[in-house]
Image 1 (cartoon, helix red, strand yellow):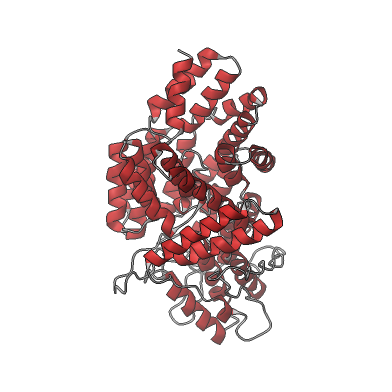
Image 2: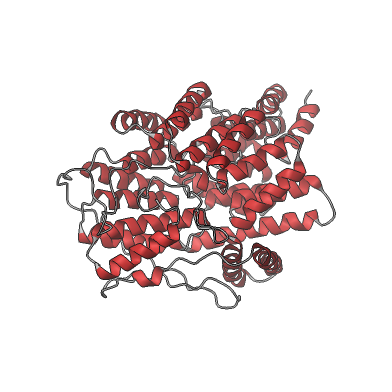
Length: 553
């Protein structure tokens, strides 16, 4: 994860957690019904589940745009299951790359048009990029009979992904539900699978489908804890962390040992900035359901407090106990990220290699390896690696990092290539908003450095109004700084580093803002700390930090 983004953002692939021993929505051998171990106690009256919003109509002006049906509505024997068939990867990465380049060209041109037209066009062009260039984690590659391992989130049962082919599993569930539309467990598992598809493909259009499937499960059995935990996972994926906490608590009322709900509750509290409560929630989860999903969250809570030693120890223990390839790739990548954050690049590469040995298509490991290569000065390898990541998954974080690598290299045509990446970020954000995802933090981070400063500040203020975390504090501080409001920015920059969280980007931002407000000594301390901690924390920011430090010596 880039130091410029929220390290714990749930829709990003980085924060997905393998869940091989889940008690909850486990499809039965013949019915695909998810059941908890033992009898689920009766609980309070079911929460009212809102109607799923209709998915925006797919633009029809761009050839190749994804126009699959979104409906999983009620009223027929199939309940819409047939209409949610997963798109398969497009043939040939070369042709996909060509279409993606054409898409970003059109996106660049659309910047000069009126905003309403731009929004629809961006969404359509991004759909082209995603369907033409994306390769689903876990899908069979090049006709091979050996499936790659999918990164398994805490919302999908291991049985569903046992084959490693999530698309095939979704099709199987859809077929099953056409025959048995009253299977509440099947609907819950299908909804969770759609959340996973959205996460692994970077495709937010799956979220309305997920909500309808989960709502169908809860209509059939209102107190079904796997579906309630699924709603928590869906809310977190959309960055509705208040909603995630609500549904996690409802699930735990039904099943206090639900690993998904326990994990989602920690995530929600962390993302709401309620760190003391998150720490207690992690302790509780560890006492009830110790395992990889809980261990990784327990480690992150300690990292946020600056206790890197404990975080590393817990992750190393988790890796030692991991047996599945999904668990190994996830935990090894988390250790790689932790090492990278501390400037230990050789250890980071070792952990990423371990992750890729388990799953050579695991996105966080591919991205982390490229980021580490950049920090070590191997820019050519870093660009090649990040281009591969972006070709498969055109998500904001790798797009921004690739753009900055192009800018840092400065070869002929690199400025245009960088602009293309930043434009595609705008397209993804537009598409995310269209499908109910709160992307204000992504907007603030990308726009502050590479876009509209006014938009960055508006987005950062909106996100801060919803939740007070170290990441939203840093985003607001930086948006205020680039808008020329350093005095207002300083308290937020100091708050971002107050928990002890060791993040070089936060320290760099603090140092620049301290310098701008005349606090030379504090600026020197913060800038030096950033470069001592992680001297290659950003393709552009690290160079700017050195210049700023030189200016205050």
